[in-house]
Length: 159
Image (cartoon, rainbow, N blue to C red):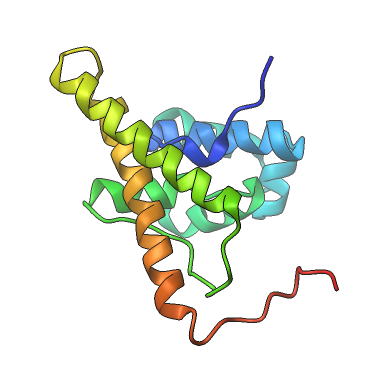
């Protein structure tokens, strides 16, 4: 079984976003609901299950849940449902060939999904997800280019 490409996944609903966070924590960080709830500061993990079941998590618990899971699908879904794009803050770093290839792949996928949608061969949700991914990637590169005159320090880089 191939690994999921988590960067390309876009939630389709609030409940789907919550489930994606849980699945990401399980697959990437090997965390179960007990450990997630402990890191959130919730004493009973059944409470978190209830929030997932009803898709009614208190707003003050969204960030702790996402931090415990190691991803931000709920925040992304909230922004996208309000018609907003979300991007990571660009650092002004130089891009590698892999970055350009990833951008090209996203743009080609979005164009392909658009053609398939207009030919009635693709669902609206899939098409919107592909367009959202491409627009976010372009917005990140735009910010990265504008930040290139004042690049941020990269503490993860090894000499």
